[in-house]
Length: 231
Image 1 (cartoon, rainbow, N blue to C red):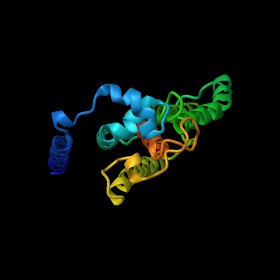
Image 2 (tube, one colour; image 1 turned 120 degrees about the horizontal axis):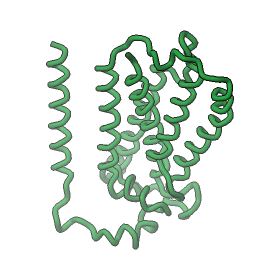
Image 3 (cartoon, one colour; image 1 turned 90 degrees about the horizontal axis):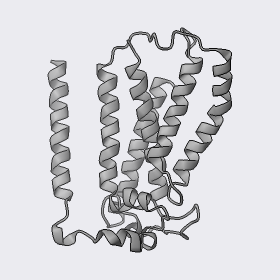
């Protein structure tokens, strides 16, 4: 019965996503000139990083779909993966590896958050920074979680809380546009100040969307990794 319920849930979710996608597709006459993203992107979004302006403003609904894919992947992998002890974490690594990880870990975490928080004014963003945060969690676990000594940087329940929190934060920011009389996942249309392009306090809601997606991606990839290494 349980596999049937799971299959029905997945089919329903895919059908709902398909209907929402079709309803959100603009008509041909409403599609903007791609050159407008380059010519007026900074003015309209306040973000110097044009990739971030497209991902979290012009095409924010698409980005929500990508984040949903990672969420669904983590849920499915965590569901079907076995829950016995891992043999991957049973071997103790050398002191050289552990000390090297201890030296590099703070830089990985700081650089990951830097890429997320400055993603609207420099190359990077939530997806790239989230991958770095996941890498930090995974590397730490491989170096320090041996046998019964499970000193995870974040427990499984904490990873799920971060992932769900990032997704809810993304959706909550998207609802701001509806609350201000605009549309879902709008930026400048909400009336929020875009600030001075090039400064940290600029680009309106894009930095917060970067943070939400970074936390979401980092926790989601960590969950997928720890689910796959179970035997």
